[in-house]
Length: 247
Image 1 (cartoon, one colour):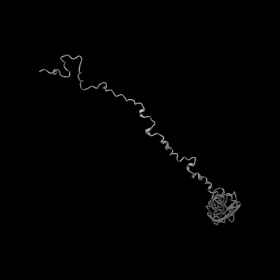
Image 2 (cartoon, helix red, strand yellow):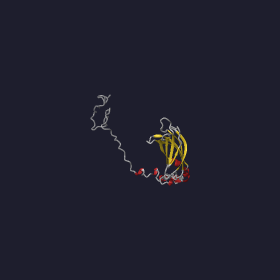
Image 3 (tube, helix red, strand yellow):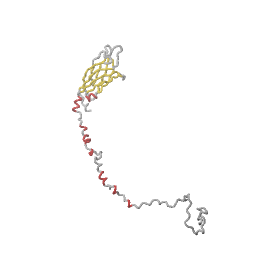
Image 4 (spheres, helix red, strand yellow):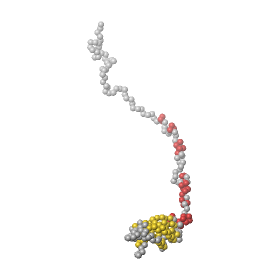
């Protein structure tokens, strides 16, 4: 707003370049359009573009003295008649914010009929020399953002939200306080009671019932009472073959 404050008495230059796509108000001949500019009670009229039809060229320049608080120009386009009242083609409002802030504006503005329909376009070139004076005199200099520069250029430790940059190396001395693996705090194996014995060995006796053998059991080594004499025939040898016959 500082660039646009103080426009009172400054000069605004408006050039009417031309019109295009105008609404045609004539039935049998080509219309003769002209443009009227109005600002703060001051009116300027271009020449009549004879047989301009829908596309008219003017290239005329006008000067306005700016009034503080008024930042728009009224524009209207008419068709000139010789024997009757001029025909209204369309009008529009030109905003000056861009021209007053940047010093230059080259835009095409839309015209409307009294019922709000499209009536064509008008091209205007607007110059405002006072914008450069305000840029050097009343424009604030870029240093408003300078106080933020130390904030970003300061080392990370200066920021209360940034972590300490060298906090991680301090953990290594603490790791050396722990005893090495061979000197761990656990009691040695000798401190514990001997581990319990394993399951008892299986008995040496054969499984029950005994597995039947294919061979007959051997004869007992001795019997009591002793067998009668002569000895009885052995069940393991055929009868009559033991003992052998005497010679």
